[in-house]
Length: 495
Image (cartoon, rainbow, N blue to C red; front, side, top):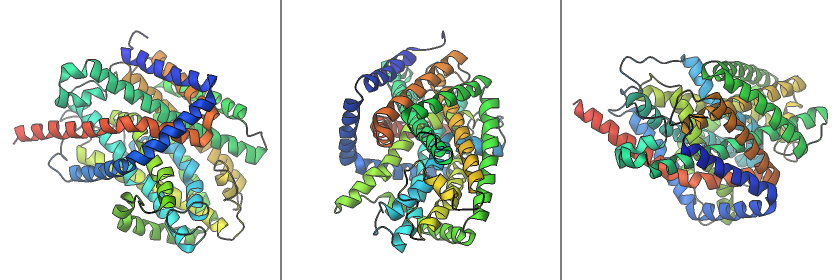
C-alpha cells in the first residue's frame, strides 16, 4: 500500500462513513437520501437536461473539428487492442449489467405501467416505450463517457500528465493548484462518484441474478441471498483484477460479447422476428427525428409528466455522470494510439447501436408477450421480468440460464474495471496500480453495494446515484473547457 496517496484515505473514510451509517441507521439514511434526491430533481432538472445535450453537441463538433486528427498518444503510437476487443471492453465496462437489467423492464414499464406521454397500454405508449429507451441508452449516455475519457486520454497519453481527473484541469488552474488541496478534492469526488455508481450497478446485478435464481430454481429472494451473490461475484472479479487488464477484462469481455450475440440470435429467431425488425426500424427513426425534443423535454405544465422525467430521464443522466469518471478512465486507458475523431466515433456510435439492438430484441419480445393482454410481465418485479419473458418462447429455460451467465460476467467485468480505475485514481494515476490497492477497492465496492441494497433496494440505488452525480457534473464541464483550451493552443502553434 506504499503507492497510495492521501486521496485513497480521504475517499476510504467517506465510503466507510456511508457503510457505517447504513449499518447503524438504515431508515434515516433512506429518508435523507430520498429527501435530498427530491430536492435535486426539482431544482436541477433543467440543468441536467442542458448539460447532457451540450455534451452531445460538443462531441459532434469535435468529430468534425480541427482537433479530429490529434492522437491520444505520441505521433507513432499504435492502439494496444484490436477494434473488436476495444468495442467489447467499451460495452462490457460501460453498460453491461444495466442493459440486461433494464432491457425488458424499461420498455414494459413505459408501455404498460408508467408511460412518458400517452396513456398506458395504447399503441402510442408501446411505440414510445422503445424510443425513450433509446434516448436513455444511446448517444446522450455515451457522450458523457466520451468527453471524460477523451480529456483523460489526451492529457495522460498526449501531454504526459498523471492519469487523474484533477490533471485534466491543469491548463485552467495551473499545476500547483491542481497538485494541492483543490486537486485532491476533485479526485476524491471522482472516487466517491465512481464507488456509488458502481455499487448501484452491482446492486442491480445481484438483484437480477437473485431474481433469476428465484424464478428458475425457487430459491428465496432475500437480502441474504443477494449478499451471498455479491460475495461470490466479488471473489470472482477480484481474481480477474489480479490477472491484469490485458488478460482478465479483455478475455472476459470478448467471451461475454460472444455469449450475448448467441443470446441475441436465439431470442431473435425464437421471438417475434418481424415485429422486432419493424419496431426497431420505427423506434430508430423516431429516435433520430425526435432526439432534440426528447432531450429537452421538462413537462413544466404537467405534474405527472415531470414526475416521470425525474424518475427516469434525470435518473439516467445522473447515472451516466456518476459512472463517467470510472468508465471514462477505463475507456481512456484502452484507447491509447487512436485519434480524437476515431475515439469519438467509436465510443458514440458502436456501443449505442449495440444497445439499440439489445433493447429491441429483448424489449420487443417482452412487448409482444404483454400485447396479448395477459399482463404477465407488468405484474412481475423488475428483477424477474426478463426471465418471465424468456419463459414464453422456445428454449426459454436455456436462454434464462445463459442470461444469468451473461449478467454474472458483466458484473465481473464492470467491477474489475472499476477496481482498476479506483486504484489508478488513488495512486497518483499509475496505469498498473498495486494488487493490494485494487483488492481493497473491490471489497469497499461490494460493501457499499450491500448497504445500499439493504437500506433502499432499487429506489435507494437511484437516490445515491443522483446525489453523487451533481458535484461531479461541474467537474465534467471544466474538463471539456480545459481540453478545448489545451488542444486549441496546440493546433494554433502548429499553424
